[in-house]
Amino acid sequence: MAGLWHLSVREAGLRLQRREISSVELTQDCLERVQQVESRLHAFITITPEQALRQAQAADQRIATGQTCPLTGIPLQVKDLISTAGIRTTCASRMLENYVPVYNATVVDKLLDQGAVVLGKGNMDEFGMGSSTENSAFAPTHNPWNTKRVPGGSSGGSAAAVAAGLVPFALGSDTGGSVRQPAALCGVVGLKPTYGLVSRYGLVAFASSLDQIGPLARDAYDCALVLNGICGHDPRDSTSLPQPATDYTSGLEQELRGLRLGVPEEYFTPAMQPGVRQAVEAGIKALEGLGATVQPVSLPTTKYALACYYIIAPSECSANLARYDGVKYGYSFQDTSNMWEAMEKTRQGGFGPEVKRRIMLGAYALSSGYYDAYYLKAQQVRTLIRQDFARVFQQVDALVAPTSPVVAFPLGDKTADPVQMYLIDVCTLPVNIAGLPALSAPCGFSEGLPVGMQLIGPHLSEATLLRIGHAYQQATDWHLRRPEI
Ligand code: GLN
Image (cartoon, rainbow, N blue to C red):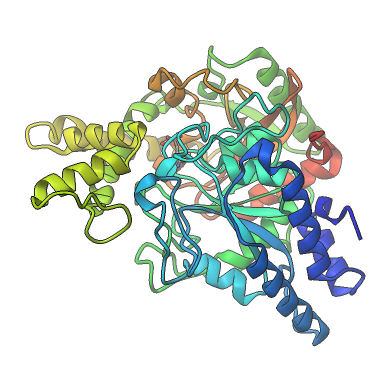
């Protein structure tokens, strides 16, 4: 049975439960699709066909007994900084090229318990640092809409895999936009949950106060299904929220009448491409047509978000990445009898240039004499950014904005200038700084490439964001367009 790879999570789940298809058939179909296009995309770092087929067989047995969940038998890809027991977890770094975790991240355990099928590990920017997946130590991922373009990053492999139909859904991580921005550039839906809603246990740390795991899928409904499967309190993550289990699909059909949306003027920057602006403005009009009221709002501290992020994230990164010393994990330079030289050469050879840049930035910002001027100040700005959001959320239920000011750019276009790359994240970083949830959904095309519209809400407003996304997708068909690859 061919052509199952294009099924959404929801459709595939229903057909599996009705036993019209089997998980083995679906998994084989996805694996064939991977074979067809992966050499042009490099969306995976590791593919695990044998294990996937074993998991699919087990899922079919489970379905035969009637004990199923919506994700039973559904294939997925896991970003390669989420620990998978027995499957190497490289973070797209030479440092961890041969690192095989002995335990699963909580999110992976949860999905396996529900009978989901892990097809492999997603390509990404090294340790999540980047916006184009060109910082992968192995190979850059290509955008399925135009293979000369980047897929965005850092979860570029995940977004490309979902867009090209290699998997119905993927798990990415978002520290400053890494789920939403690649989702936007590849024309899929990406959700960054509220900080603490999804366990970070087993997520290799980049910037611990910002990191959050989130789903990428082809529509809002599927994101709700996946969020159901991965959220919930985890005693092994001290930042995990004590939230009771919620069914994020239950309120999706509620209409938008009466919903108040704010459009933050600061997100429509001069650097925004006109085609992106047009698509996002048309998206906002469509939401208005569905009964929402729309008003302009202002988040004046947005202009400090980039600077604030690029102090806080590198500072936390420099602390988190201190553990790669050649002793505990992964790559180890052995050809010396001097411990310090071994450590130096390990870090020199194991990390790529962007990771080294971040470690240096962070170590500088945290060093004595500079701490107050940089790190402490950034934390104070962080409070102001949070307050900005808190203030507008007294007037509106959610914000609508672009996800990225630009569509997918050519490979190599921004690699020479790190600041150009950082500027891509202006619309996504503030959300992480404030710990808020946000959803990116396709809202049109510019230059033949997908544009993403971002919905931002107050803490724990995932149900509202998904409801807006779902209503929008019932009325439009951008999310149904598929790249011809
Ligand atoms: N592009 C941003 C960075 O390079 C965000 C990355 C992320 O969210 N992991 O830090």
